[in-house]
Length: 110
Image (cartoon, rainbow, N blue to C red; front, side, top):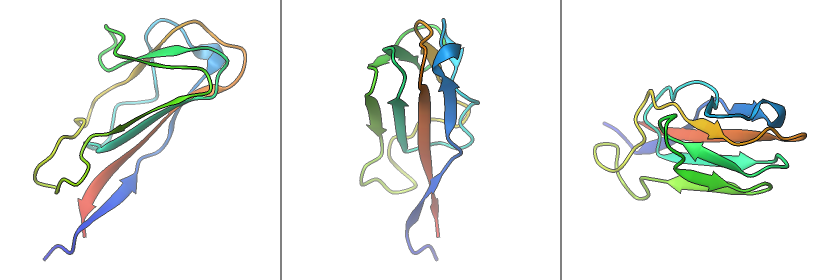
């Protein structure tokens, strides 16, 4: 019998500012379907985030972050999740300092 859900972090994905370019993969694909994503930009340039490597879907300004809490208050059998295998990309011009980080979490029953 499951007691509830636990939140499990995945390994942080990083792209150094000097590596930013046209549709550069941000780490590897998601290991699990995730319910919480946070893009953090500590670089000195604004960047676009792409969910498919083709289209810019969001912007993350220098010194800012973007948070997607896609399954708030949802159980493990329903709700909205970002599918396992999704690969995110960063689009923009190379910076001189900082990095782009992707922090993500999945859930599991315990």
